[in-house]
Length: 104
Image 1 (tube, rainbow, N blue to C red):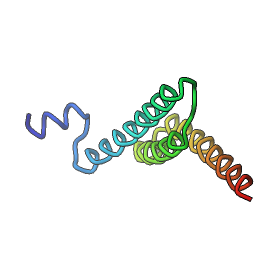
Image 2 (cartoon, one colour):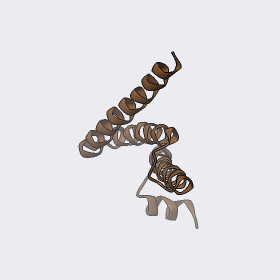
Image 3 (cartoon, rainbow, N blue to C red):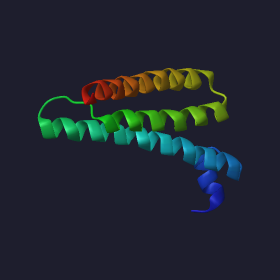
């Protein structure tokens, strides 16, 4: 496979665009990781649980994908990822606030 064929498959025409596709794919891998973490944690406990790592992978994936969406100037993608970032951040805030209260 030559570079022109790869660029055709990825729908890019420069190294800059190629690296942005890699950024987008990295964000998608982070989202996949969060589902795997949640699934494995639930299987271990034999009940549905959402581990802390789920929210960190969500936040990291959201930041990376939002960056990619901003580069692509996709308003639908930007809006969707931005809303998720608020939710992930809020959940992490609530978790850490509760842990601080219990530590006192």
